[in-house]
Amino acid sequence: MTHAHETTQTHLITGAGSGIGLAIARRLADRGDRLVLVGRDANRVTDLTSLFPGSVGIAADLGHPASLADAVSAAELPDRIDTVVHGAGIVDLGTVAELSATSWTEQLTVNLVSAAELTRLTLPAVRAARGQVLFVNSGAGLTAHPGWSAYAASKHGLKALADALRGEEAPHGVRVTTVYPGRTATPMQAKVHAQEGRDYDPGAFIDPESVATAALAALDLPRDALVSDVTVRPGPR
Image (cartoon, rainbow, N blue to C red; front, side):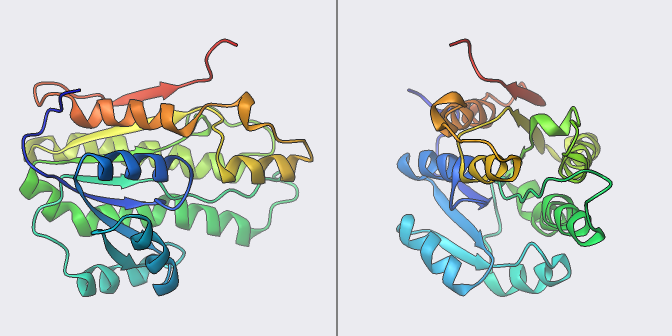
């Protein structure tokens, strides 16, 4: 398979430890690209960088967006970053009648506010590379079902962030893509099923590798085009 890029690229990835983020990171590493991996603390960074020899880690807690500037500054990132992949996310289900303010705040903080702040901090390097920002959103970013209000609100917000950013950064040559996966066989999905009180069968859902294939197609698209949004749904069985 040929790729649109001619030289080794650098990708900063959140959520690279599991699920879709891990699948994307593995694909990029396998083709020889450089990875900068964000983990919530030093131990997590060690775990991540051991998965991907040659990668660089940043200890940055997405639960505390005000701390991200110092974390990014301390990491001495490269001057050029080809892609920022926002793969991290948390979910806590519950009805509006039941969800606490803490649950709302945590999901909005990790899933949305920190994504905005990390994007802001890395934009100079992404602009220098005329690179791309890829948001791993969710079907919940388009439709909010009962019990999903806070998570869906954070993902609807992430869509707004991506849409605004796409227009703002086009003059700088930066492409912005959002991927909306349906239910995917990830650790988060297992947690959702536990919260819903249902048995979990990974084989009933999208393979994270399939979502990674869609994401990489968007990243590798020639520069004359842009995949702005792609929805990945479970195929017929």
